[in-house]
Length: 79
Image 1 (cartoon, helix red, strand yellow):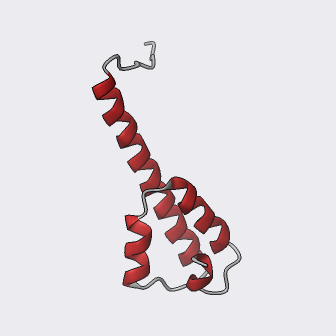
Image 2: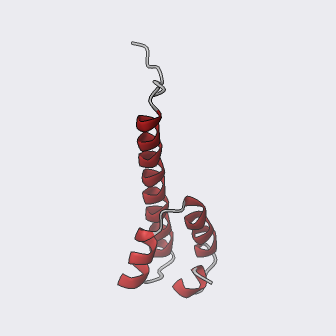
């Protein structure tokens, strides 16, 4: 069985497929950030969790992940 990558022809469909991919990527980055913070033993409050979950910018989330690796506190992630 051969698997191929289908490229949608309609700009309308392409826009929504790309939007879905970006949202999925952001959700994965948010989960990774929360995982790093938990692994480091840094407690995440409800407001901070909401801030992370509401962020839809993968680049911003990656920056926060990088900071979380060495942060002394959760606040250090968002400076």
